[in-house]
Length: 327
Image (cartoon, rainbow, N blue to C red; front, side):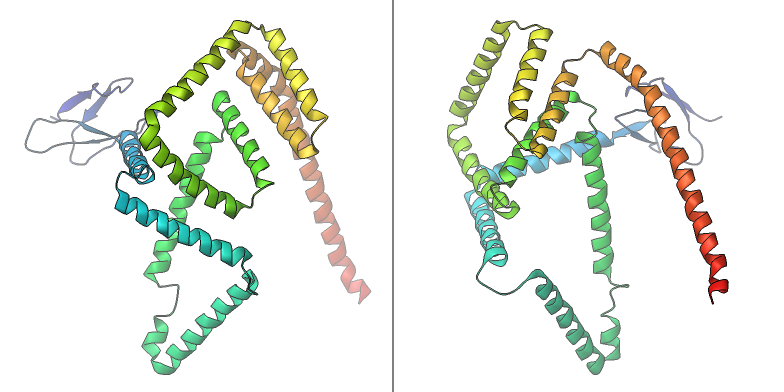
């Protein structure tokens, strides 16, 4: 008779009953779970379910990587920090020379030179050895396959970051990100992206050194300032109506003093501010009122798409039948 194991020690809801058979069966995670588990059995002992929390492992590796970055930026190992700083400074200066230096090399010219160099090397390989020329093919190169796998992993990571931060599930986080990217757009009108990257690099090392030496004082100053701002804001005791009036006045002042792109950002920030102050019941009421209009708009869009496709099909058929008569 198969051994029966009830695994209810790892927050499995509802408790799962696993059968130990000749093959390993991994239960599918519940819908909406944040901690998928892999269940395996240890031979030579009583049947035991070993749950591995992959999410916790991913968070642990991310924490370790962030700790290593902090160690470098805070100059806790001066030799490694100095090496990283010198290499980064060289890359920043080299990039600045390539982008804005006194030379005549353009991106198109550089790409053309690289292609000509590849053609020349492959021609030389073909004249020297046929086997060496076969190795020049990119389709069977392990390096290209590794680069493709790395690019795929990078795309999936970007998609994961998008779903985590830019899916607008948390209104407070969305408002913070909108403010941060609005500030970046202002900085982008002053600095180029490369100079902004260079300034961020040098600023990170300078701030890390300052925080390592005066971290207690800086944290105390920031905490004190934050508490003062919170106390004064709470002392105003503004109602939701007063907050709405203040928001409308601020948006109106910004609206009459900025351009259209900034006005769009103002509207987005205002909408996110209102969203952060809405109650769940109010959000549900807005969704229930908006859903019929959304479905109606989708139906009209589908009908217009069908009409457009039918028109294109009839027009193409008419042109096809008219060609023999023209000739």
